[in-house]
Length: 114
Length: 232
Image (cartoon, rainbow over all chains, first blue to last red; front, side, top):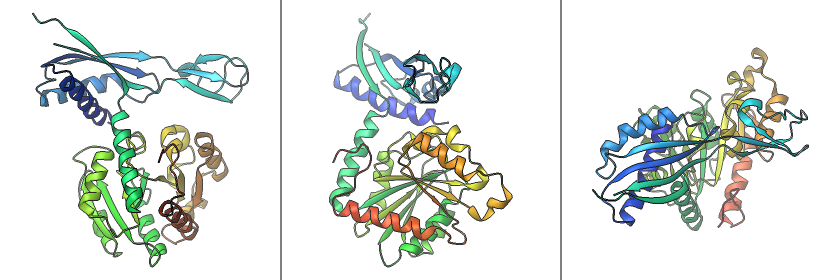
């Protein structure tokens, strides 16, 4: 449900970048989504495909999504493990003293322009 | 065929909004206005809590309220009865407010004399947590019937909230709500979060919360209040 709000912010940034660089059309925008960012990739691209028609610069612009795996660090045994599989509890030493290293990112990586 | 160029952006989707929010906070600071962002799920008692809070602070603070909803003005009408200045914002289907919309709301409210403006965000535990509104402090309400496990399910909301009001404590005997576990889960997400158990309907606990808010407003106006992470 929040994907549409996020799409409007992506449009603002991409349009601004395009104008700053005097480009006439943007062909593709590439996003980087953390595995536990809470953004559903399919919902994001669906919202994008609906919203882009409102912008001349972006009407032919497709969206690519790269997924960044979520990783958690255990503060007790210092090992890094995949977050989605094991959650907050370290699979090596069963400690709960863990923190997320990456996985919440919602980044605009780059755009392809003409 | 024109050659295709790649332009690197490499920035968070929220960076633009974060900048706008920071600028708004700075402006509010210079005007001596404390903006509180109040969030919760639908039906947790935001409007009732707000009415009780306004009553508790009457005579101490000049209060303005921005009611954000997808549609209707029932909340704004309820707040107007308290005598506080109020504006209803319609988000047009959007599930949250961002810094730009908050700025528009403040302009519409013509906030100037107020020293406390409360933004009642759209009822939702997901999206409002992601967008910095420019508020000085974030408060959220968790009501007893929702259950004590919500901090586990909506981690970001609890992580960014400076205050959690646990509302509807009058119905505690009828629900399997574990207050100690709830406190523990909230502090797992944000060790600094202040927790106030309240009942907006009976007024229990409202004074402690209103006093805290009053002190925060005073600190902000006198130049000592900072929002976590804010650089002013």
